[in-house]
Image (cartoon, rainbow, N blue to C red; front, side, top):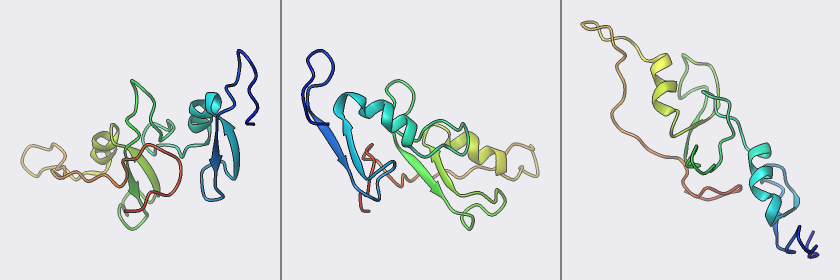
Length: 120
């Protein structure tokens, strides 16, 4: 990693730390988006990689612990795009119309679209 190969690699790379998904190590810049899809955590709703994928996912997600959604008894991440459908599965029905009662407020735990620690 780091040596240019004409027609294949520019020599640019990403350094991944121990706490980065798939790290520690180095990844060619040209390989990074595919690596990210492979190493990223999986969405609890659709099982797709929780990463920015142009045209599919923004990279934003909601983090769930077993305590935050006890009726699901799962922990992990849910794409921002899957959040409403994921919550709908566990929402209680309205006593009048039977439709799920959903929370109105949305908060993102993360918005940097990169592997690694981002601070909050």
